Length: 127
Image 1: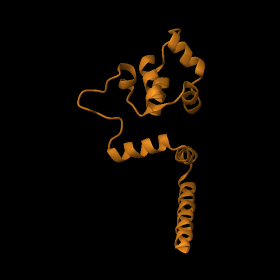
Image 2: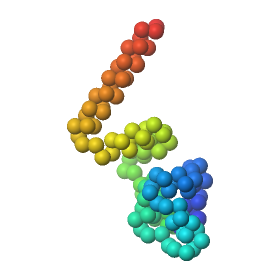
Image 3: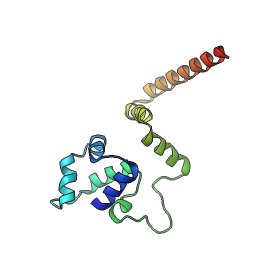
Image 4: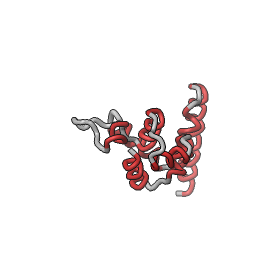
């Protein structure tokens, strides 16, 4: 499993420090996996699989299931998740809104729309 984890680190250009910080898994845990002192528990492996957008099976075996099952149900979801993963500001916004209640999400949405309108109005004035 650790070899596949290292491949994912390289593929996405991230460090164990960053994965540790964003998943809450201590760096010492990664070191103990690498040295073979301990084996990963399923909950931590699932966090890593979710972080990289791969299945747990892929993280363990390096292969997806037969039939081409993917982690996401459709391409739009996969695209949005990848965009959030790659864009620091979108990830921060997602993290902030993840535990918000419906009323707060609606207020956040309205603020975003107001900012978008303001930007559009400023662009129209410049023409």
